[in-house]
Image 1 (cartoon, rainbow, N blue to C red):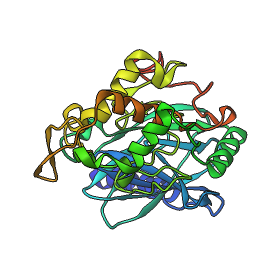
Image 2: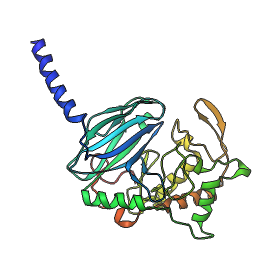
Image 3: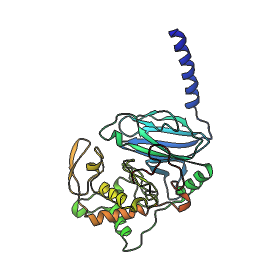
Image 4: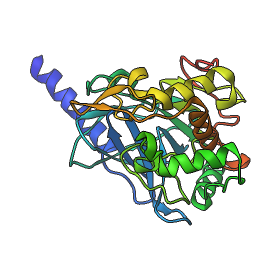
Length: 302
């Protein structure tokens, strides 16, 4: 009986691997990068008009009713990519790229998590899968390809935030956000942190620790406060975060104790205003009208 059971399981395993591992040539290709403690999703076959591959941080957009080929790797330790609604778990390993197939027939927003213990904020390393019908997916991807960050009006909060984002504040040793983050269509091309090109459209913050699910998104008072606190002292609100603090406090980065630079609350609000301005056009808002499935279907934390 044990031999019969093992033989039967072997047949089922081989059959499942044959379905999951090969990916057809016409599959939508998405590259997945896991790092402590966030995710980046790149579309290697779509080059931005502003230069570079189209990328989005912590929110993966995929089409329904067709195979999607995910090529998964890690930039530091082993992570686990797991979004139960679109497929099984796969390890994200440093220096290793593995491609496997996922799919879903139903449009909606699904929860994804890191399933491999990877450090202090393992439980805070989340992401959203936004599955769109083909026409909406094509519209969104075309808008992401054509996107260039808007130029802020002179003297506006967004303009002041843009200057701080790009240059930091040398007099108080506040590091420029652009050193670690990319914003499509600007000189910001950092790769140490998530791509922020479409932050104003996104509804998650801190790799899914906070959600802004109301129509007001990051202007809703509670969400606005969370965004402010995140920028001000990320390591204090998310254990293990490698983002520097901007309140002058000490924080740990890869085992080293560092002292953050200083920005005033008003300056942090200016950076927040700039981030909120980074929006895709309304027709490419992939959250709009997309049903949210799972435990947070009632509207997240807001």
